[in-house]
Image (tube, rainbow, N blue to C red; front, side, top):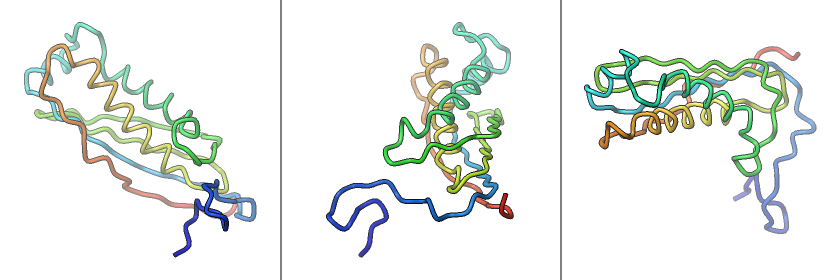
Amino acid sequence: MDFTHIDKNGSVTMVDISAKPVVKRIAKACSEISLDPATVALLKQGLLKKGDALACARIAGIMAAKNTSALIPLCHALPLEHLSVDFEVRDTGVTITAVAQCTAKTGAEMEALTAVSVAALAIYDMCKAVDKNMVIGNIRLLKKQKALEA
């Protein structure tokens, strides 16, 4: 079996993307964090003692996406042109969705996945004083597409 991140000598290596075309790429990912209903109420009312958890999580997700190549070994650095982090607050938690866009030789799915993962961790951090039952999970890629050549 041939592995993309292992060279002919068996050493770990970054994939060579030099021959790939530069195209517009979009990736969408989501994650979920379950919260106690009382925590959701505090979140909705803006009464968490640490402040606005969703604003903090949005910034954390954006910062994480911008630094994905520093966090994930062998991941190419991408020139992100746009990244959105959005939230759907439900009675039992929050669904986090991120869309990453760039014009590059490789896709932005790791950036979108990193954004939703770190955003969930930020919510966890903001709520941990009042909720000991939080669970982060269901982190997944929803869409990966490339447009015509740039």
